Image 1 (cartoon, rainbow, N blue to C red):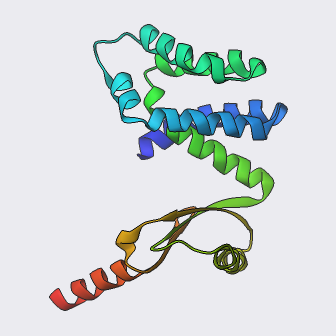
Image 2: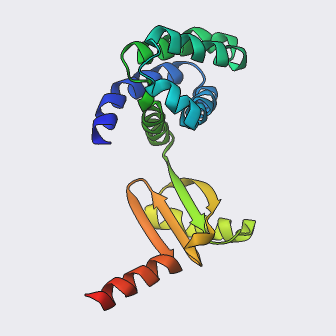
Length: 181
């Protein structure tokens, strides 16, 4: 994964520079949609298929994406897909987008926070948690809330590279490990 980060960095920086000179919010929306597209298992299989040429893969992507792209961005996105495909780096697009978001957040003075809860949280619970987390990290957070019942109870929070795991499943696993040793 460290290799992907190294390879993705120049692409992310170029995209960020381009987006900053245009409409960064619109670029973020388009790149988010592209990331969802690239994370689909069928698309991953297509990208990794040795029997399909880079030119054909690029053509397939562009034909699928074409109608959904704003007209002003079509050339830039077309160029990005073509370059990534030609260089055999289409598979790293999710990492490119992740690094793009980091650069965008730095510019805006914010950080993404992934909050995973064992149960649905009310809006007031989320707001209270985010306020406390913003105080802890001393910056504005962009929370993404998901529910994972396997946590049994509690929450798991990821902010940048820091993980705060207050879930029951992790506590039980740690107790089990301590008893086995």
